[in-house]
Length: 426
Image (cartoon, rainbow, N blue to C red; front, top):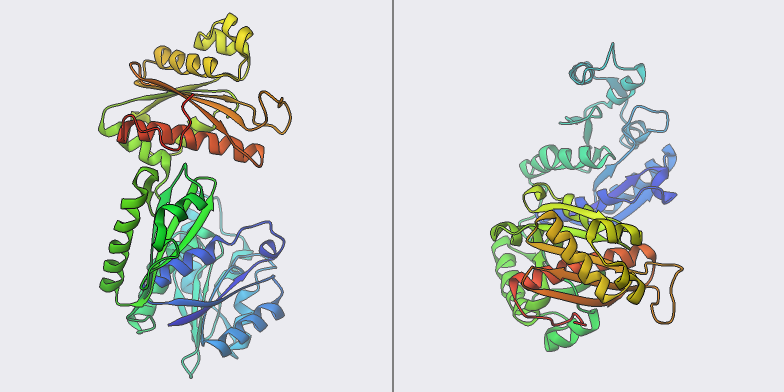
């Protein structure tokens, strides 16, 4: 089953908002045998919305839109698409009472603003897709030829809930999704370049006869996405697992997870399983490593705390880095990184101390200590290592990549003690 997707909003065209809705819808439908044939973004003008939906109906006869269902004057999706179907609008009293109840349940005083009544002006003959968490109801509108448009809110949380809880069950009940599916599996790597992965995979670097392979490089590393198209669900799953097993065997030391699993999640779970705790000491990364760890729910049973020791005085007073060491080697050095890791581990009583110190740029570099140089130290008490990393592009990239390398050093120490492949040990 092929669909067109129309995402609506001036903010999308201006680059002020990233269209995450389109990617989510494409993934969810692919799992159920649906395929997005074309994605189009338009602004909030009624004629542009009507033109995009009309063309999409001619092309596939099945259209999903997001955005333009709010209570303000620029929310024109409902009347624009109703006009495409030749439908008048009506006031839905049931939906208005639902909005009133939601308003009062959220302890807001008085009645909802009159502007909210715009959200319950719906096309005649539509199926209402109730919003489980917000005010804007979704709309399913179909003509006598079986062509249809589903209108969903633009707010990502509301859109996702309505897609999974309302629209997909409706499409399944009407046989509007295919028996064959498009399914993908993503293997996540870090600490290895895309070109090196290609060499390691050898004859399978371009994929397999029955499963395609894509390389997706990013700040976290290179994701390897395997995809099966137009196959029954059980066949697709079997093919993906067989091909993923081949990639795992060849890339094992660099693979840290699958799907959307992040490296902080992996490290926290490894530590949790072994009753290990973590403390961090950060200079150039300014608390980013601690932030990434504590962004994971339940991290408090592993992460004890951290010290952002930007100034040398803080390195000395809070982490116990000797002043003579700072004078002799400078803050950006292997010696200071190791002292920071040991200091934070001892002072916070953690199993593992992690430290980062470097030059994040864009200024401040020297020929001896260029921008992008970061020393990473890991201290397990009876096991210490210092790693030298040189990261590139922007200040944000350097800081993030440094924390990723620090987490990967901990992962490898726990999973494969003694394995230093891909990390320079100085």
